[in-house]
Length: 469
Image (tube, rainbow, N blue to C red; front, side, top):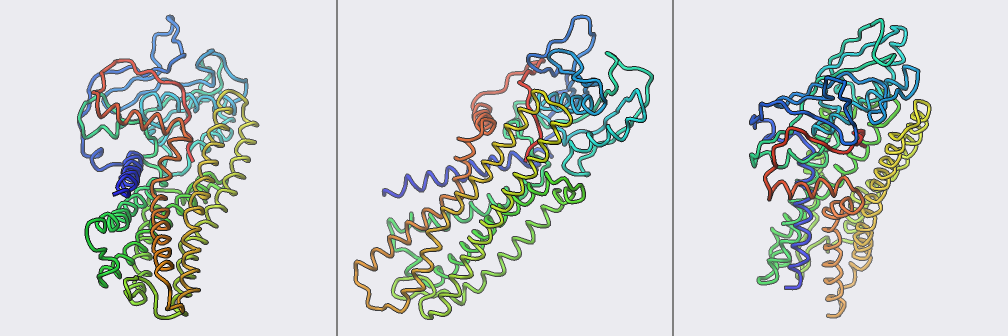
């Protein structure tokens, strides 16, 4: 009975992790739920005053369409241009657009159309370089028109106005509760990997932990039923490999998405992610089929027990494909991401030095640390399994083990399994502790579930950035 709290903790974490990942994708419910609030709503940003002499609002939402006023390269709080060159003004104008999109529960990936005004058409290439850097993939580019004008307000050199959409509305429909939380990854390729890995994790936990719960009151089918022994081992290995390699693919995807190579960034797309996840699923549903022939049940023990050579092969195969390679790739990605972030910081310093750069650096450091922690936690949870496989292979020839030795081995196997099952949930708890934005969205999810969202014509939030690894 002491196992029940542990099991409940693991299952709660996995379900929460899955819900969080699903918030980050285009939900089928979200796509088919067309209950809009068809009234005009003003979108504003806190601490950004609108002068009484300015007869306009920063943004207007009607239903799920957002109309953004033209943005100049000036600080929204002070109202002053940040510099006198087109490059810095373009950078600032796009940051202002990001903040307005966040205030409406949208992001830069949901831009539909933009119009750029330039006082000097010779600055077209300079503007284009900064503009393109704000999108991780060419698939995210909105429709656009560029117009040369004689003059702009405040003697600015560039102005950008946009139209976008949002999945956020004030409807109290329960089907949209999750979508109302401000997750900004719905069209980000990385989320495809997270969703598939979460599904695989939810298959692993009932098959793995559920067996131990069942064994509290009944005979353990894993040690008494040969068919269940083989099928459980196959299912656990295939699903475990799927979620491990999906996480690895997500790391590679993030590494590619911030590359300075534009062609390479094109591979960080939803279409590519769907194909890669399909390939991962097919490969890891096929390769573990050998388990059905290798695994056997003897003397209440399930495993490769009758051949030292096969036992060593199975241990080497599992350790290499399930631990060494994934961890190595994750560490390499972390190093490459660190270098890419440093290059991006240098590029930002060349463009402008303002409060947004400080927020960017803080966000980048946090994302890098979370990715590194994920690799470290993965290695920690996999190390006991690697040692267990080696010990089993080394002691397979010992047949006269004492009762104490057998009891110690079974207890060790149980503890290793429990540590292994913690990994599907540890990322949720880690992100909750490490990320303020993650905590805020998680808390808002429960608030939205227990308390109807009040309708308000003005929606104010603090400025945030939308560039996410």
